[in-house]
Length: 422
Image 1: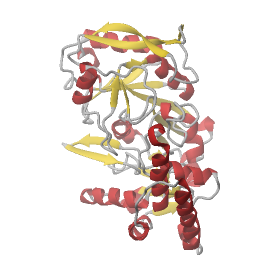
Image 2 (image 1 turned 135 degrees about the vertical axis):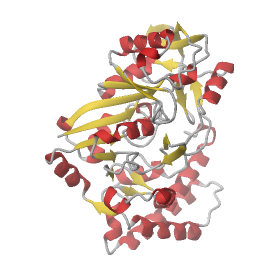
Image 3 (image 1 turned 45 degrees about the vertical axis):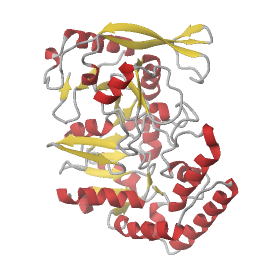
Image 4 (image 1 turned 90 degrees about the vertical axis):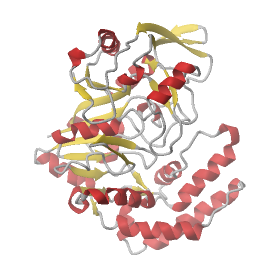
């Protein structure tokens, strides 16, 4: 009777989808607990790359049940495309995929409001993916939102029209040049609602309690990363939900005392998509090489990711906030061939060296680095921990010593087979 959590510890894109796929065989249920289709979880096996946005990453394992929890916001249009992409694989979604009635819906006008809001900010924009995530969570906390369960109610269309009209007025008030055809967007939206209706809607917290009582194991799958958490991230350049461990409790209705392991995933370096501070960002040839070798482009948006050295100050912070019990390091293979590798161990903040994560990363902050030896070996086909180069193992051991948490999985490539259990 336990729930384990799997979380990203940086600014997202850490490789959570791959690790969920690797771990799924140990669990009965994989549950997404927050975020929306701005998340892109990439899985690769049998020579095929799969990108999921809303559906949990356990969907390709025949024995696992998959739950989209109450903390998630769902765009029916994007969800329908995901369903279509899965059709060739003959997955029985009727018996293996469930949606919480309490999950909120992203309306076409949420996306329009997102775009209008970004336009109104000019150079101060936060780098939204323009998927309507923020406005949907705003309606949720403002008690105006529409939930999946509302589709089953008689006044569903009336509630939709009332909220959509409100959004159009808000867009008008922003006074920006946003061209759109709402009738066309709504036609696509209501068609996709029919696909959504084919998936079973459930009272998800009771579903979870029943399975826990029956001794089943649940893996809660996070989206985005801890440094994008609405409370603990680099505000305001964050997402609109709690991406940290606490979000699993509210996003699924899980009591804290049911949580056992917290798996924290991080890259051997750091990336970030969109706007916001990034102390260790590289603007030189090394940064471009990491981006090229690591294929650092967003799985959802295709946007290039900013790349930099590993930031241990931020990573230690994320480990503590989440109560991480096991670490998993991704993309160590990307750093192969670099003679020297740097790791940020402190910040120079307003002229003083600090080891803690401050209120803001934006003002008068510079990274303080420790330099380590790199490795030339191609480790992408390495199967065993002891076969890894000594300099790579020294890098791993240095990180474990600093973070005070064991690294239990090392990923050396995108395929599920390119995974070393330590």
